[in-house]
Image (cartoon, rainbow over all chains, first blue to last red; front, top):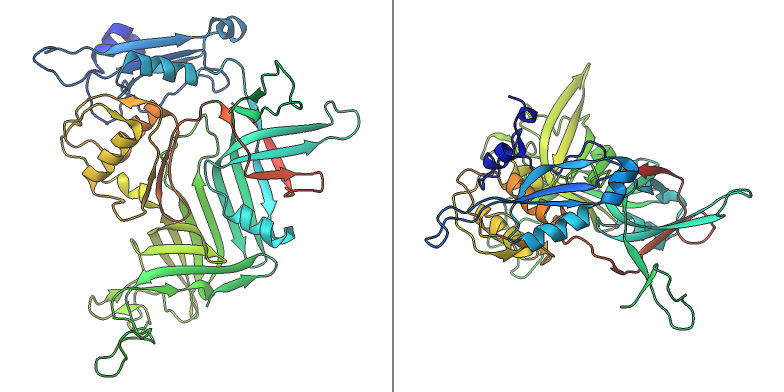
Length: 197
Length: 262
């Protein structure tokens, strides 16, 4: 039976276990109807093992919302995902982390051909690892504002295509929440792009 | 013999197999102690000279729509005019007379490196031979890293205590007895705290790691050198990019990119 025919209370009741097996109502992923925006995150905390003090532990559901984003883009809500988080505070922190108020755009699928690089650059690109932070600068022709864009990104995926005459590396990225180091006498006060260490 | 690609580097593709005794095999009463002679058994065979095209992919293409706990993959084609890689050739240098079979095939460990830096470490998952008349053979090989095997590993029932993300990942790997060698794990403590929820009997290891990952929203992957890596989710912090790609004539030039969205 499709799970949309049952209410939230029943869905939660059916999720109160600690198995790692995924099924139609017990997802292992936070699937959303729109990838662009997440403004409602539903996180359930799996109950701990029963104890004499708490013989019937209950599932706790935490919902984090961003009303401003809902007003602007409509509701984009995750499934209720039963997590193994310990406390509601952990659930709140995760929910806040997962909120994406506005659509994100970033530079990705960056193709770099090793043949044309210096030896040092070849080594750097060939040994890039997932999780590494990189920056990408794109300059634009006259008439485009701004004339140059710098994005700070995380490497999320790496592809190598090696043939007898070339080695092509494609870097898949994700946007980084990045603050630049605040430098006294140089950085601008009240500029949110700069942070203290 | 390692293969050199002009202006790119020297590439080595190796398979861990048994077979004909190595040239520097240790021979009792003949070889000197403390020499470079090695004992028999499995060894890393350089098969680079038979391979032309290699594809490697690790990680994910879109951080918002793909799971982090996905196996890295690799594929290549073996050009085999001598039938060294054919299961029917008992004279192959990779034929294991003890087991009476070719020692390179499904589950054989493979590693690929450039200038002595690994690009991929994993095992063969498919090994498909194609024979063309009159006498030419190719083998299409696909490989996966250590996460692939986690799909087949089931956990036993276990009680847990409240733990950090990193400690619970370690607990699960220990319970499954995988990535247990020195230096085979690089697990960060993480931000989230995992509750004392018991593990049910028969829970799949990869699914269970995915549930832990859902709590943290960091990354889990096998590194290019074969190390299981679990990274914490990133909080806003001061960071310095390791690499800068640029079209301004300085730094590392790129050819194309897309503007992704999510």
